[in-house]
Structures are given as structure tokens and as C-alpha cells.
Figure 1 (cartoon, rainbow, N blue to C red):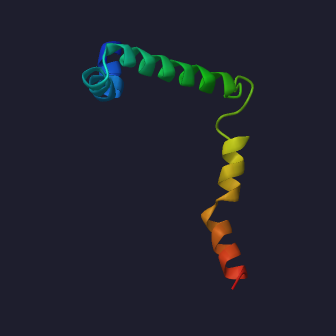
Figure 2: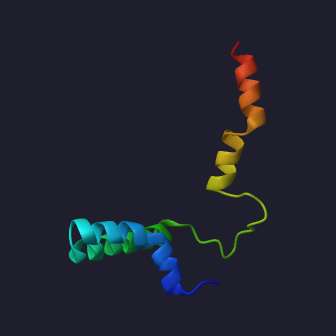
Length: 81
């Protein structure tokens, strides 16, 4: 597994470099702060899966899978003709 600094450089490096050269180092801080807040919001809004079986598609993913299944789309397309 790569070191934390390598991962951050790969993900945030190009955008942070552009921000630093175009707008200054202060904007890199704003950018990283916004990325942190979005990550924390995503973690907060994600459902708890401790007591759920992850091998069976449950919840949101199962609903999307059922709704947008290739077989279902084929049937509804054929039925609408």
C-alpha cells in the first residue's frame, strides 16, 4: 500500500498545483478543506452496514440494480412497441 503522502499527491496533486500557481497557496487550503468536508458528509450520510449482509444486495444498491436491470429494460422496451 502506498504511503499517505503518495496517495494525496496522486489524488490532489494536479489540482492543488494548479490552484497554487494560479490563485496562491491559500486556495489549496480551501480546496483541501472542501474535500475534507465532502468526505465527512459522505461518511455521515452513508448507512450503517454493521448488521447487514453485504453479500446480498440490500438497500439502495439493490433498488438500483432491480430498477435498471438489463433484462427489465429489454422487457419494457419490447412491451412499449
